[in-house]
Image 1 (tube, helix red, strand yellow):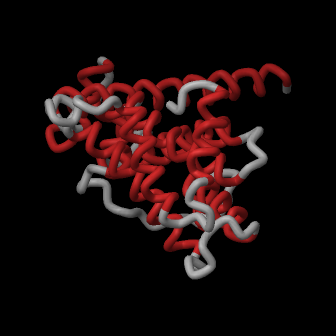
Image 2 (cartoon, rainbow, N blue to C red):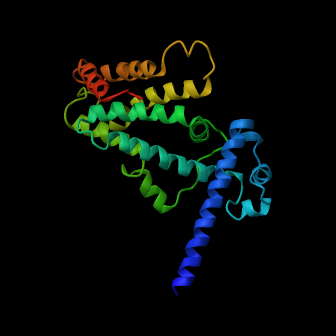
Image 3 (cartoon, rainbow, N blue to C red):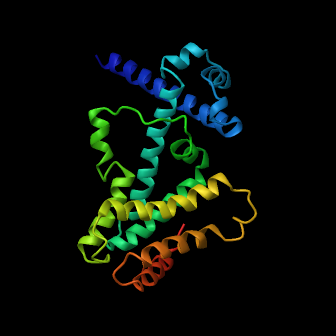
Length: 233
């Protein structure tokens, strides 16, 4: 009995390792050639396997890209939760989560491109388990960001007329997503490099929060506390 369990565990580990190699190879090819040029055959050649072996793990290229996105969104969520785990002030949490989003894009531009900037990756039909995860702040980065904003709103930190948590979340997300997308898509453009990314992020979030918080000056105090703890990004 114990021997059979050991064999199964080893096979599961080998299967997971191969899936990881396939996804890593796909990322490399996307970075080198763009997502349109990547095929299952090219991925197989990169890891020196037969295309048949790839299809045993992913039904087609679309399934592979979806699996890649699932893994990357989980990684993004983990990073955001780490940054906000010990934060008691929801507005400070909003700042740290927004900056963490930009940091993720800078560290993993290929991940970010596939997740948000690849038309070929169409929304997939979700399972019941995936639908539950999507709205769970513990497992969904967007839901976690929304929860921070909801807590700040409930505490009276936002202007009273800004009473739609979904709209408030999307406005603040748009601010940091814009910063991240510009630097991923146009990283070599000279006019972008004129402003350091940390200052770019700070100004974008300051502009959005000043217009949304009941006390606009609170933004400066929050950023001062963040600066005391270390770099924003």
